[in-house]
Image (cartoon, rainbow, N blue to C red):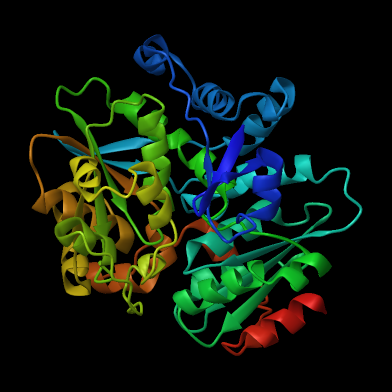
Length: 428
């Protein structure tokens, strides 16, 4: 597999380089030079195949001989070890539950795959690899769970102080060992900016081996494409065209869906669902991309004012707005609408959704058209227990995995929103 920088297509990288660097050396995002298409017979026979079997075929088609077949099989079997069931809400609407992994979030698929792949590529190195990651909620927990006690790898997680739920914070701060959590005085965008500054700091990268587990790393997007095939498999008996409704913040999840589509998965359309941080939906309406400071909402993992993966979307479409809006529509909703959606889904379908899936449900409801909608359920509702309890008017049960967290010690380091402070910490 060969990749190029979105800032300079003449810059080329191997998969190993892409994963170990995170960003291109010029600060661009990395994209495959070729997206190979799966044959029609494979798509038609998806219902006959297991999730790990599908994932292996997709991964091998995309990355080629960058990882030997036996090693890739081992990586896949360890990564795709939990299900992604499709739960029907109505005759034309379903939730793809992506929260059955160790941190109860969709990012477990990417983190588990990356942990094993980076460990494979890093196995002969003497110096430790430091994974630097910014999180608005779920990424950090998934990365911590995926990389905890992985030999030769340290993890540094930046998260916005006071802007993640208590349970999310415990998922970041209770591991210890090779996992460090930095509570930053700022927003997720501030955390992301600090991470980008570190990756663009040549002298720092000469002193430290740095990479990222955010969706800026192509190693996150490859495995996130797998569950688009798995969800499609479970919906193939539907008569309507299949549309994916994607709760979106940094737009890595939607970009992974576009990769699946380019590989031949016949997704009819995508619906990008955001909260009031609606930079991309506004772009889809006007053709103008205008980043702004993110605003805090109940769906905090989507509180992003300048989504990094938008560069990848532009790259896939040659920056042509008219082509993008053929495949992607946008929708946004408020916190009050999100709360009402949680109540509505519970009342009508006896099903509890988290605030992010609620944003997806609202997008689906307001843009019905003639599709069978697969709404990505990106996190277990227990991770947002106070919001769910308030919306439903009673105390919902807590997932056993999170119940255990309440008895663990939280260890975090307070950090000013200052790059020099972060730089000093990393060098120390």
